[in-house]
Image 1 (cartoon, one colour):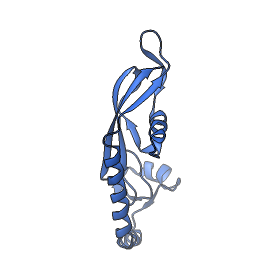
Image 2 (cartoon, rainbow, N blue to C red):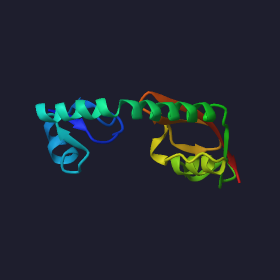
Image 3 (cartoon, rainbow, N blue to C red):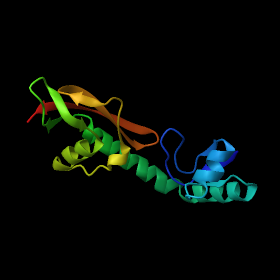
Length: 147
């Protein structure tokens, strides 16, 4: 079934994208939670008109995301974590700690746009990806050190 997304959904699409999903996923989860609507001809016309009216606003949002990506390009983070004597972390490092470290540097980034490909359970160097816009993403290197 074809649906129009009302918000960004990881591994599916971005707001106002028209995507094909299985009927159960669309009817039982996406539509009842307000994350999508069925792509009827009238809904598609409304979407086209809204996109036409928002074109200049979307260009500004993309420009802001590119400016933020340029500012974050040279940032390297150091995150402290409690570790055992062998270098294994108690717990793990996740997007919340990365968002807090970026906030200390003056960049207010939502933790939902930060993705880490692996579970971080040891001290070392890693990379996080920030999806600032559907066409703009930046990789942030960070180092996990023992406190």
